[in-house]
Length: 165
Image (cartoon, rainbow, N blue to C red; front, side):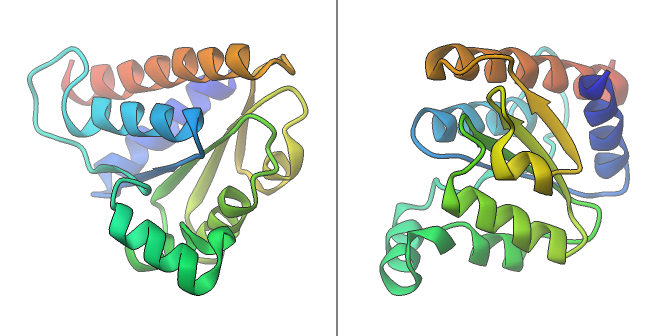
């Protein structure tokens, strides 16, 4: 399955001392932060932390960059600064068309990062940019976000089990 491919890719990333970066807007930002915390904190096991960062948690950065460069670039500068070849950007967007998430995905691709898109049914433009598309088969935003959390937890569990189980 695609989720299994994302788990395998994430395991390879972490074994190579890589990191995962996470982004979204609104509820998707909350989901991105939650899932990054499962990896950097713990999921089931007491274990060393994995580098996973939600890109929106520094409000001073987010508001300054949005003001100075426009909201569409709210994540690109952090991706440019922190992302390296082989790292993974997890990009959450129920529509698949959020301008700032798309811009982050484009920046990630330009740096040799792997892009995993979690979207709704259509995948939107993000689905076209992504290396891996995990599209929840719905057009209903709350159901899509619930699907993202289910997929995210499956991914976190698979990573943790493989690296520390």
